[in-house]
Amino acid sequence: MSDQFQIAGKAYQSRLIVGTGKYKDFQETRAAVDASGAEIITVAIRRVNIGQDASQPSLLEYLPPSQFTYLPNTAGCYNATDAVRTLRLARELLDGHKLVKLEVLGDANTLYPNVRETLIAAETLVKEGFDVMVYTSDDPIVAKELEDIGCCAIMPLASLIGSGMGILNPWNLRLIIESAKVPVLVDAGVGTASDAAIAMELGCDGILMNTAIAGAKDPVLMARAMKLAVMAGRDAFLAGRIPRKLYTADPSSPVSGLIAAK
Ligand SMILES: CC(=O)[C@@H](O)[C@H](O)COP(=O)(O)O
Image 1 (cartoon, rainbow, N blue to C red):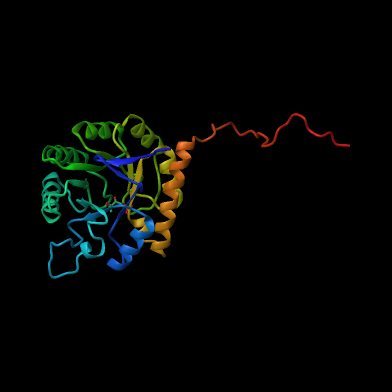
Image 2 (cartoon, rainbow, N blue to C red):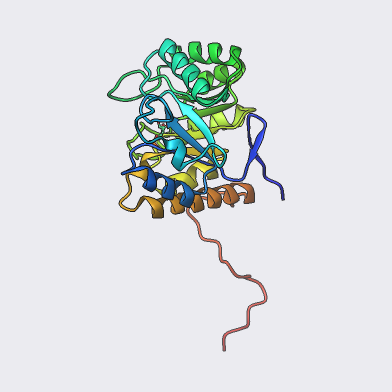
């Protein structure tokens, strides 16, 4: 059965996108990315060196763009102007690269998206030819507006960035998934593998995560767990779960034709 995951016209095997921040060093980043099976990696242009500082080691040496699809992101941007400027810089550093993750934050306390600024930035970036994957709230109306603007993927938070609180509002995610015609990925808040599986079982097309892997005691092992959870959740979604029942039992074996007890 073909079950293609496509972003901006390109097919990927892995539905897991991983961040590259919060690791001990670039070697650990590479090991975790390999264990996760991710093909798309996101990079905070304001925080991670991909050539902005020629005197420092660059992530590009450890995760070459020939092997991974880069997804430059605007972590640390609090308004549309900064976010657009940051992604234009990323495009220069990565030779005209178009696929980007837009995140415009509301405040440093919650890192919740500033939806008004996100919409403004998304409009500009789409007009400039970027393929925009957008971090947003789990508001289905805003998600639709971002899709109408032309974003190539909608990425609602599961819970606050870095909180590891898992999926707080599965019902809103369902509303977004049901109406979207572009891929929907949960971005932010995943804490452990079961969160990832639940998001995929809900029908998310993929997941973007960072902290749950990078902050685990053993990031490489957690990366593998996330890879398996995303695959298991996707299979369970496609397989179609049994309907939920009231709290009543249903024997697993046939009830007719029983051998009579003596
Ligand atoms: C790496 C990145 O883009 C984060 O801003 C993203 O939102 C992930 O959040 P978690 O760290 O909670 O997975």
